[in-house]
Length: 393
Image 1: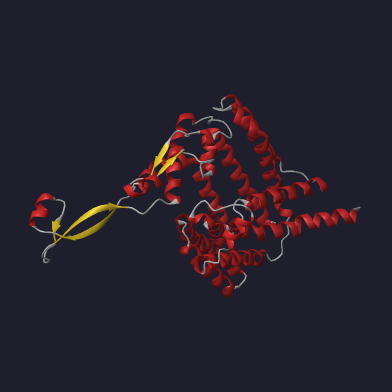
Image 2 (image 1 turned 30 degrees about the vertical axis):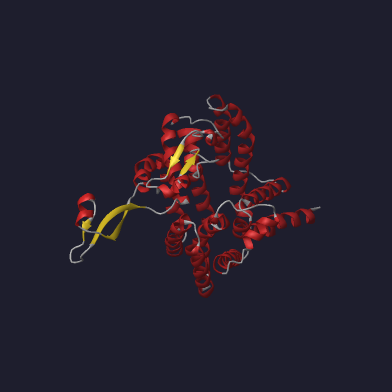
């Protein structure tokens, strides 16, 4: 019986976590939302390990878990939709417990050569995305059709996979460089970068630039980068609604101007004073006109964040109740600024919050208010302390 228990524990803490982590990037591209199922399976694995071989949970984390559960259950009393809140209370509580166990059990997970594991996984994903984009291999499209699904947009084939690659890239690159795998790291970076830059997702391109910066920070600062990133995260949690309200409106309303030329004469310029004669060029005049690229997922998300930040102010202390964010702003219409008339139908978005706010911190502020944000901040402090204790060991 002891041998069986040891084998099960070894299997649950070594092989399954390694396989799950390796599959996150490919699943994110080939089966959108599949990576969340993998993370759920990882949490389930850790829970099974906890039941087979119980160990003492961190008392600080247990108090935080109880406080969070208390807030979630109490939010039904001030929720804008008690039925929706009652529907999600138990699943949210289960997720919180899985997070508690996952954080506590992370010291028991032993994955050998995790940098190679993740590196090969990212390389595999980048190759498939590259083939789809350059050679039009339609690997992703064919898989979705086999599963009975169809992409909802031209970028639907790539967006989630590209974002997951950019999120994992700095961690993997810094680990490979630290282990002296310079050629592997260079090839992976170039292949992933080309795939992201050629793809349609503007959010992933911005994230790529940030990921390069983060990779250098992690590589040169080492363990200190964990402390710095945690402090930045805590500051972001506390100030997110305020910063978004102050910055987003300016970002989404940036106008670009294009210079337009045409042939003209004196009679035309008299009737249209906005057109000016070009000095030194006869019969030519010019004007400037506002111009902006067609709607992107990034601008859409920024508008959602701006709307959510304004809604947070209405119930800033307690929030609107757990699980209610998808019910807010359903009659609200988002309009992309400087939308061209020919594409107006593509720039009107009905429903301000599609399913969720696309920002977990804003969602906590919206649903659980400042109290929820404080508990989330305490969670990050707990993670910071726990991470530092593991590093010292």
